[in-house]
Image (cartoon, rainbow, N blue to C red; front, side, top):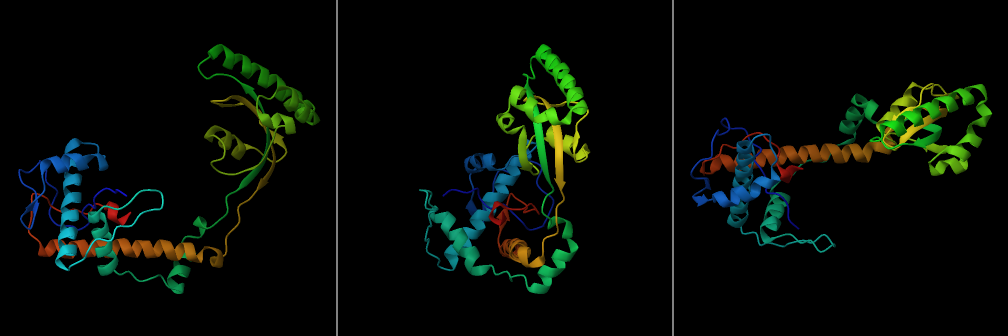
Length: 283
């Protein structure tokens, strides 16, 4: 089981602006080749920023490994049940953090405060009961798109004059499998369709067909909104455990940040200034 090395999470001096000749922790050097290999785990807008992030990650990793060995931990690697197994070093880092870093579990009062301050996060999404007719057209074929648009506009005019014809037309014309059920897509929520389709739904009233065809990568859609089902507030009891887990993880990350800072304060670190960036260990 391989993971990217933990990066720094404590604030000290400004980050270096070039690659130092030597990077070391308590006299243990970290090779430039190791840093170059670690760079792939730290995408950045500039190569020097990626290099610096990789160097910090390996410095913190070495810092934690030295502490784990100092207190006499023996690696006990775990596997994930799918053939991936921790290395001895990964196991030592995990065991050290599990032993030395303690974060309190969020209590009921804390969970309630977070719930009250973030009510908008705890709502079910709005749902839409929708029908559509798809006239397929390749986005790269301009002529096909133009013809599909004209065809869709004719059909929209026909449907507006005779709404009861929608289902029959869907069965005869739609390139979507939903045509077999009168074009019905059932109840759809956020992220279940392409953005252009979702945006069109937001502009429609219940029982209304879109005045213009909706263009997506699949073609031209004639869209009918049957019903909009508003989202509803969830009770605290339903989301309390989720909130407690989130707050607990936040506290754990802060505790890890402080622990790394305390180790760094007692160590001799050369070539790298540990910054405030979040670490993969904390993600």
